Image 1 (cartoon, helix red, strand yellow):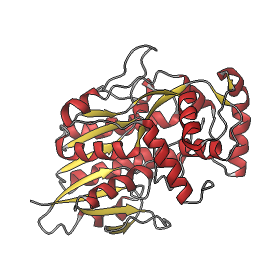
Image 2: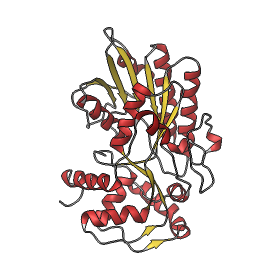
Image 3: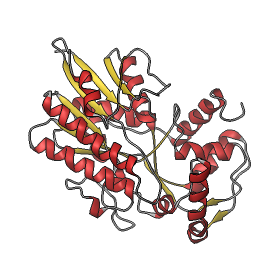
Image 4: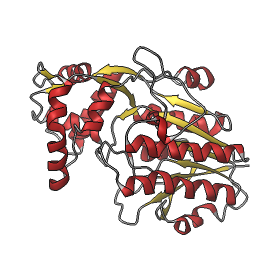
Length: 332
């Protein structure tokens, strides 16, 4: 039986990359995008709706003409804000529950839920973080992490009740085709525009969006029911990332790095300013916490089962810079 793929959040960084790889492989793809969205994936059947509105998604599950349906749930709001934001909860938790409930109602053949490594409880520094089975908002820090943990728990509970669902946990996603312009892409733009005279100590595990998309598609065909897989790369310091950008662009090397306490002091005011001016912040109390946290994630499980192999970060950054030039975001 041929498979139709249904991708939520198809205009986002991860979703659009998943769709691009599926259509390149000749797959039949349905996409869910917001009515106001302008970044519409090509070569797909487009459905306008919102994961927060269950009724708006029902058409995506119908009229299969004998095909099986695999749902890839990418829709989500990534937030580094400090406080509670209703939209983050509504999309990440309520939206995921709507998708899961429809998958069960229509007896889909497979659900892949794109969670986050933030949903996994942090271990003490020096210890490698691997996949876990139990998720709870109480075991993680930050509003975004709590929403992803709660949603992941709901997906796995549905798997226990019979739904063939697999969860993937990407680390810090970076790469070209980031039309929404996420926080890491914003950092790259600021560096390339010469607006980053000083940066913060710390680091994180960053992974190419194209490798994540490939892992998601592998999970759709090879992921075990009720199982979880980390899609990471390796830990990079902020200094490493900026040094690679220096080598790629020839822009001035960043040599001044402020200690976390100094950035932390200014972060609340910076976050407030960005909220008022409707700009995307790079450093907030939560992002500072994240860059100081244990980010040693293991992708050994996905590597052993699917041959998952993330590419070199210098390639990712070079391709991202080239894409930003093509989009006119930075000087060519």
